[in-house]
Amino acid sequence: MYTSFENMPLSSRIWIYQADRELTILEQEQIISELKNFLENWTAHQQTLKASGKIEYNRFIIIAVDESVNLASGCSIDKQVHFIQKLESQLQVPFLDRSLIAFKSDNEIFTVRLPKIGEAVKNGQITPQTYTFNNAITNLESLNTTWLQPASETWLQRYFQKELV
Image (tube, rainbow, N blue to C red; front, top):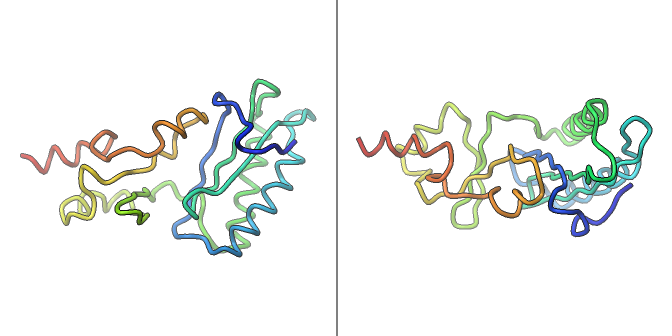
């Protein structure tokens, strides 16, 4: 059962899927339409899931489920991943590439591949004040509080400590 994202409790479980580029308006409209349809019919063990979804920063698909109503099961999560894979195929946009880390600086969002982070720090593209997105968070409260943090306050701090030596 689809519901408005604003009506989801802070305890809702979330998944974040990141595009490697900004999505066009047409792509976003298509995603939202298909996402609403998917979530309207999403179930776990034939039990309706109270769920919602949205796009943030023109590149992140966020799906939330209120597990106080019904728990998302392994099979239902698999259905969600298959839905995202279908979007990847239709739009030719990767959403499941976890080797891309997203950053925000001066209202610009950019991605850097994990092996290139040290180089991006060294050349000043990423600084301690550059914000990074933690797509591994698992609940809506964290989305509102710790999704976006200065790089120096995340696992990336080790790159800046090396620079000081």
